[in-house]
Image (cartoon, rainbow, N blue to C red; front, side, top):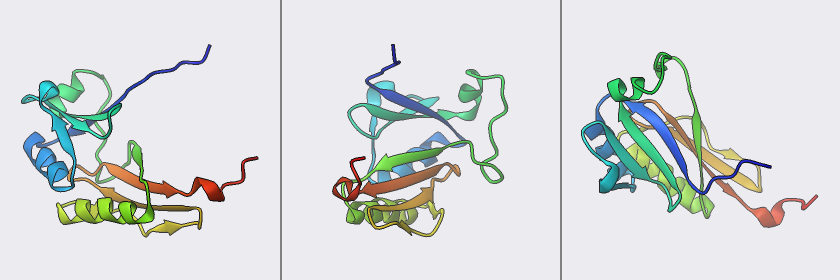
Length: 138
C-alpha cells in the first residue's frame, strides 16, 4: 500500500525567528498563532501545507546532524505552485522586496514558468506555474 498523508510540515532552521516571521509576513504569508512560540512559528502555505520555522537550537533537538550552512550549501528547495505566471512574479517580487534575494533567472519553458528566491536564512523557495492544458496527457 502506498503511503499517503493529508498534510505536510516542512521544518526549517532559522537564526532569528522574529526576523524570519517579519520577512514572510512582508512577503504575504500568514502564521498560525496556535503553533507559534519563542522556538517555532507555523508558516501557513495552504490549508494542508505548512513550514515550521524552528530556531536553530530547537531544530537541533530533532536531529544529530549539523545544520546546513545555507551560505555554502542547499539542503532543500521548497517548491510552491502558483495559479499564473503573474502570481509567480508577485510572490517572488514580494519576497525580494521583503529582504530576500532572487536565487536564479526566471525559467520559461512555455508550459512551465518558474522563479526562485532565498529567504533571510538562505532557504531556497521556487515558485512554479504549470499550464496543464499544454502538457501531453501521455
